[in-house]
Length: 444
Image (cartoon, rainbow, N blue to C red; front, top):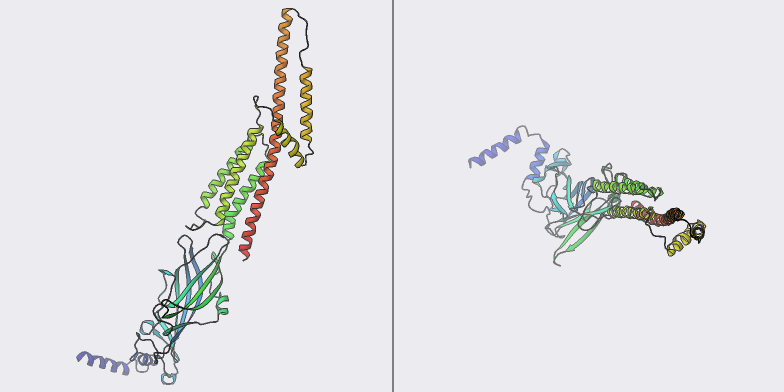
């Protein structure tokens, strides 16, 4: 009894003291008198509370491809009519709206279904209430949501993540959801988006749906599809261009003479450099357990092309290397490589004709150098003649080895040109295919 008496005395003194002429205090006491924040604010329980919501994306904070998580910073707005927070402005000095602590009013239990973590959102402790009972609850939210991210088109990828707002408990008979603005205005609104980051906001799509879990109770949901596109300039400069430069140098390396050892060392240096490049960029590429981006496949294929190029160079250098014990060029190789292939390479078959003339000349030389029949002579002359004959055979053998080496050198040059053209056609076709795909993804 004493406590109640003291409370009445405090209220009386407050009403007659420093709060005597405070209109907002009187209005707050008027609104809070008998208000039950745990009860849905309708006079007729059959009336559904319609909650109008709106969403504006302020920033894309992070896109975690590995964990399939999107972190955004949004400005979320919701409003509804509270039939118990109504007053006549004439009774309160024409006050038409007032701020009330959020903890003192009824708030709908609308949540985001894709929430996976509580973001660092600022606490907004007040809501605005107008004299006709319209409650406006505006607040910024850091949203950490699950999203199915497709990284196949990286770095020209477009991601579409959804934010689904619905009442966790109340059915559509109690709480219904609508848009605060038209879908067209919501789609094109980028007024608050920070446009200097890695991601670009394309548009926000909305979709209203009524669903049922057990074919008995129906719930309302509003789904916002946030469509964003990655800006590829950073990855183009730091990933694609260095790889393209290395592949161009690999093509240029084919113009080194195949009979010199410089081409092999040059190709090995390129292969090592590309390996170091892949180690450096491995942390930049997004990684998921369900797929690999096309740019990763591109790097692997480029590495395979460098290995093929090095293998071709080693084989050609081995083919044209001069060795005294090297076997002669087989006739089928002469026909296919030195006669047919040069004609297709627009060399007018001169190499084949030159080899045919060379074969006839070699046969003539062998016939010319046959040992003529001789009469028996003194032993000293026989010894001298044997030495001269041995020298002649040595020179003939050396000339034949040189001719064989020249033939293999010509075979190596022709094969080198053929393989280079095949390699170049494959690389150009591969580059055009990837460039077309990435151009289409960039424009889309």
